[in-house]
Length: 155
Image (cartoon, rainbow, N blue to C red; front, side, top):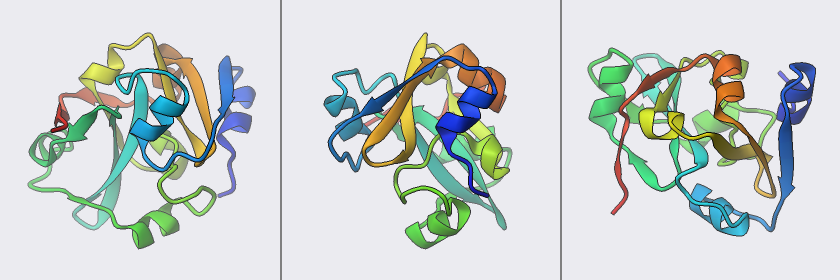
């Protein structure tokens, strides 16, 4: 599946701003490079659920709470997918720069309620040097995520 996120957004007639920045390997670094709050940067965290996977999307400034994620996904427990699994699930993007569009990879997607309250979000565009900014409402209408409490504050 070779899908560039920007082409997908253009196909869906969604307004967005593409942002070029120096290499950023964490969502918080990406926020800093773009001079935006980590609260509006959407990071995708992929978790293993039984024998499949799901995508949890939360603000870069927050940490995924595994118990809350399991509850939101209606399973007993979840664990983080490793880099090898990520590379297989997202063959068209840089590992660690996965866009939060689980729908494009047939992954159930849950968005943290804090992020869902934002007017706009910034997310990875599949590389460590490119991000996109769009309205949360446009993102939600494309991805159709479940919204739940997923996070704890990062220490």
